[in-house]
Image 1 (cartoon, one colour):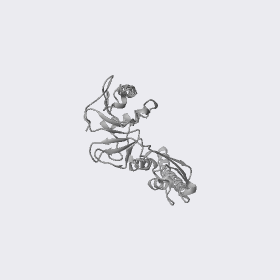
Image 2: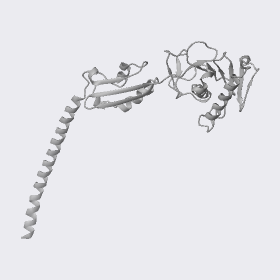
Image 3: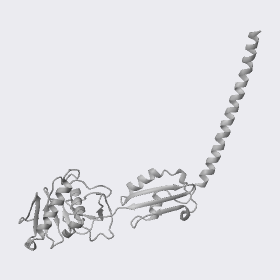
Image 4: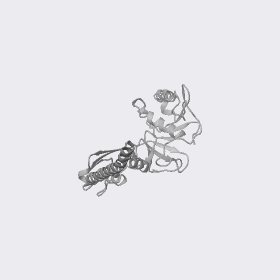
Length: 274
C-alpha cells in the first residue's frame, strides 16, 4: 500500500513541476517584455529633437560650439542615452589639441551640458633661420597646438630644424627647458627681463634675447633638461635674480651678451653667438 502511495505521489509531482516551470517562464517572459517596453519608452525620451533646448555648450574662441557638438555626436535625431560620452570625450581631446579639457554631463532624461576649456598660448614655436609664424604655439603644460590670433607679442621658442615639435605633442628636452625659462620670466619679479625669444640650438646652453636693448644671454641651470630635478626651479630663479642685478648695474647698457651659465657668476661675454 505504501509503495502505491509513493508511486501515485511521484506521478502527481511530475506534472506539477512542469506546470510550475511553465508559469515561471511565462512570468519571466512577461517581465522581459515589460522591461523592453519600458526601455523603449525611456529611449524615446532621450532623442534630441531641439538642439537649442536640449544641448548647452560652453566653448571658447578657437573651437566653436557646433564643432564640439559634431565631434560629440550631438545632433537632431541622436539618442543621448546611446552615446558613449567618455569615449567621445577622449576622442575629442585627442583630435583637437587646442582643447585643454571637456566635461559632459547629462540631465535626465534628454538634456546635455558641455563645458570646454581651451589652452592658453604663452609662447610661439619658431624655426631657426626662418622668419614668420609657423602657426604653432605652446601652453604652460608644454602642449603644442595651432593658433594665430593674438600671438604676435608672445615670446618665441626657436627650434633648430624643421619640422619642429608636432601639433598635439608635448615639448621635451631643451625645448621644455626653454618653456620653463619663459614661464619663470612671467613671474612679477622677472618681468623686467622681457624675454623675446629663446634659441635651443646650442649644445650647452639656451640663448635668450631680452627686451632691454635686445641684449642676449647665455643661460644654463642645474637640471635644465629635467624638470623633475630637485633644485632646478630654485637654481633658475637664482640665476635670473643675479642677471637682473647685473643688468641694473651702471655698465649694463654697454653689454650685448651676458653669460649666466656658471653658478653665482654673471658676466659680460665677448664671444659671438652666431
